[in-house]
Length: 243
Ligand code: G3P
Ligand code: CA
Image (cartoon, rainbow, N blue to C red; front, side):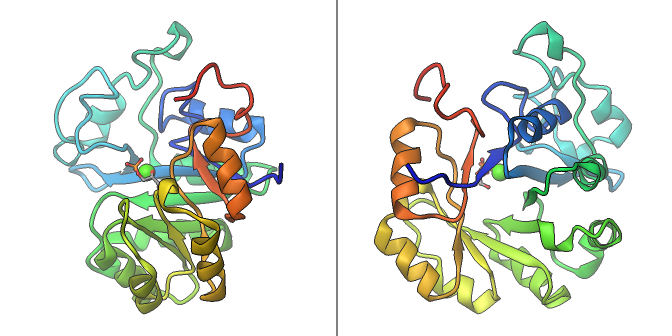
């Protein structure tokens, strides 16, 4: 079977606490070609990695990320529900992830999924500056379901790599073209060989989310996608069960 580049969804979240440094480091060590992570902002304006709006599901705390200070957030245990070895895992700052990726010897893609709305340059300026200073601009792809956020990013710079996330069943081609995206990130169930042919003809890369079963990997390989976002990077043939 043709190999497809694998991007670790929330890190190697099939085995490690999602969106923690343990999950990102494990992903790189197992040979993932990229890392996907979710970006939010604390009450005191720090960029952190957290999927949900609240900390309730993934930590021992409760409440909204946007209402907590960085100090309050990093005191939480983000390793709950896993092996005791992960107890005490912290919610990472985005700057920590960027610094890890820039020091990593493996040349990987970092897919930042913006979970907060970007409405002006000021909303993201520090992040774009870090990325540029770390010479990671070509390695970072910014994605969001929020078209307005991607439009602002595109207005800020034509150099940024942008991927439009589409909801299941949504045809994002017209929007992706309009906002100058380089890639479409569809639900993997929407992907067919015809879909990928059309995307490539229109000069889009295709990076579907989130495939975690054997049949799905085989199908995406047959469709010739450009990368697949998965909780099981590098271990797709070792999964204990189809999840
Ligand atoms: O970036 C792909 C995927 O992560 C989007 O969905 O809910 O897992 O952030 P979600
Ligand atoms: Ca995500």
